[in-house]
Image (cartoon, rainbow, N blue to C red; front, top):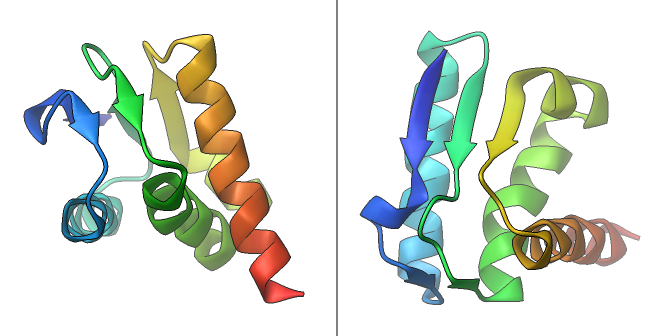
Length: 96
């Protein structure tokens, strides 16, 4: 299982260009790997719109079952887990 370490992109993830880059890198990893780990070590903040951009799009494009089967979130604080959840919820709200 391959790992993408978000802190390599910065400790604060708050720019849409950065969100796009992370999403592209995750999608590229998913082509060659059955599942991946997204490691939040040393990430102190993520804008909700970046979470929507990354995790919301993954959730929608992969289907919920596939998302939870193939994506493992590691070393995320409770605040980061809430931000990921909010990003997914906002992406789903935008679809309806």
